[in-house]
Image (tube, rainbow, N blue to C red):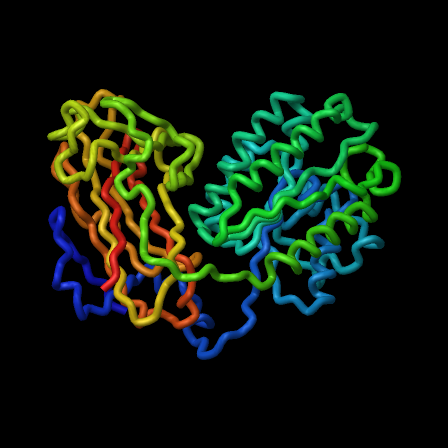
Amino acid sequence: MPTQRLRSHPGSLLPVVAGLILSCDSAMAQLSKDSLMMTAPVKRTLRIMPLGDSITQGGQGYASYRYSLWFQLQAQGESVRFVGGNQTVFGGDGGSNPDTSLYPDYYTTFDRDHQGHWGWTTSQIFGISLDAASDARPDVVLVHLGTNDIGQSGASGVANAEIQLPRILDNIRAIRPVARFALAQVIPIGPGTSYFTNANQVGPLNQVIADVATDRNEVYSPVVVVDQNSGFDLDMDMQPDGLHPNEVGETKIASVWNAILVDSFLNPVVPDQPLVSVEDPSFEVLGSSDGTVEGTPSGIPWRFGATTNTFRGIFNPTSASYLGAAGSGTPQGADGDEVAYLYNNGGAFERVYLYQTLETTLQPSTMYVLQVAVGNRLASNPYGPSTYGGYRIELLAGNRVIASEADAFTPAPGTFEDAMIAVDSSSLPGFLDGQVLTIRLSLTGLQSTDATDFDHVRLSTL
């Protein structure tokens, strides 16, 4: 399907848009052949990513809760897939195979894909979460994390999990905006492990997990707290190491996951359609003074998804960064005095996103026009060395890109210039109607010190 580039100057709405039927080749590439051929609603396969540490991965002869959960779902006739970048238990196929007397179908009909990592903390999971979501494209994520944080670091591990768990959710949402999350309060820690000295931190950790679930819960991307702790018997359900479940404990964990899946996730509800509205479209909600930089600020409707070696946030540029910005003035081509920034501090393997999922759903026979001001700060700016890093703007319906553009122009140094994309929903597969919309902005530069700023985000309908 054809892609057409639309350009505007600040303040214009391009009457040429009317009557155009636009789409995006990159969006269509993401739509599967089967999806494009759909003519009537069918029950689609749910992609479930088990995400966590050793309790998710399994090892020491045990296959983890994943085995029991898979066959519970199969017995119920659910159409599901497990997804993730791992297929083995700890030690690999040659190092620690599950006991086939306990797991007879492990190498045949069991779906072994997962994203569990033996011994990993929430910080380590954050480091791979963006790539894991990109590769696995999960619809539902089952998260059991934090045991290694407290086992290795005690109370400071609780504080670390409080920081990293929201970042993990944000990273996955940056790739899959309407992913749904089951966030587990972790199982107990018993005698037999060095972690037992920090077992008293399980309670504080589980309170943090409940708080994160409440704080990050959204209508379009729910986060449900799952109590995996209550009723877990250290004598009956745990391996002798006091840390990992035995097959009885695995089945108990699986049954709790299954109940949540059936109750909350197998038949999601699409929110009602409100008017098109972008919250804080010009990044002014913080009200920062001239020259202030706020890294990954809280309390704003925008979220950031990023790899470790990136900087991102909101700043109020001075005249050393943008023309017209003196004294909290408005940078040329922007709107207001504050802008969002994305910065690559690590090079070729770093990625960073800024996104907002709207409470607006895709409507049939509607033209959507997305305009975003893209900024190229002056080389003399006071925020460290930087070079213009390029841009990508995307509009998504559900988890699918329906229109995008990347690096079609370079703004003049010290200015912002509008990028614009448009798509007519009548050119899209019908099953996307009713899916919530997400605006995603990203840096395309693959060199250290690449930077791009964004402002004045507008989504209109015609």
